[in-house]
Length: 331
Image (cartoon, rainbow, N blue to C red; front, side, top):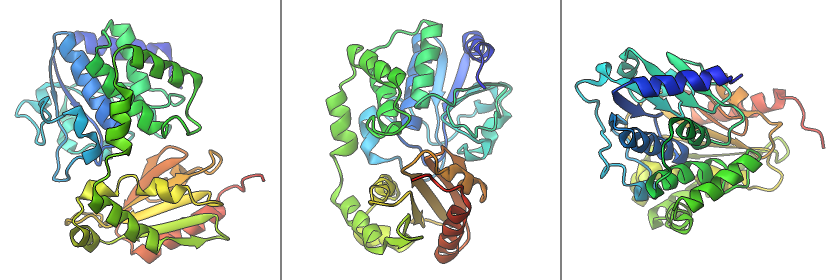
């Protein structure tokens, strides 16, 4: 449970530090990237020495190019003084999902998140499970710090808010989340531009990749579970970059009658484990994070994932069997 002392401890750590390194989880989504940028901009506004870093070879999702992360200094390798900086990890539920374990060598680790299965790996932790997004948590942190909501910070926070609430359609869309959206709009966020860039700027190669996933979609458990997959060769054959698989799971989630949707994908590069699995549920009573934890993953009740070296068929069997063991959802 989050307490006022958690907020006070994080605010105190942010106020007392001079040099910061802001990061998030591997395969970052809108909340991760928006929160990353917002935290960095807030620290710079407060006069702190801040750098952003997301290591690893995977490209960033193209729909978030409007955040101009690389133009604003995002590093894809750790700076030489990484261990000497205060680490701020945003939207990262487990330390194993950080893009580089060296990050935890920092003397002080500030962990700000909203995932209910966060492992509290920080020196100080602020995990607000009832928050719609990490962006919402940061908005409260910024208010405590006296950070002014500039249009740039507002747009970064809005990107996290709108994507993690599924365009304000998911069950985590609370009155507080909607009030925050209004505040960000008043602060100068161009919400039409964000919507167009995130949801209406789909590369044709992504359409072709989506077509392959839809062609392979299969129903299980009397139509209550839908599973599909992407092979590593699919990306090259349709000319799609790895992040183009983002969002496909949400199309599968919309299948009528399906309470659980899963997409198994093989990244178009040598990785270990060899397969990544994204899961979504259409009902908060179907906890897909419980299934993810069976394989060392995690996430939200309605959005979770894990990695595995099992075959596509074995992963499918695991998901379908685990779903059958979940408590039944009342009609």
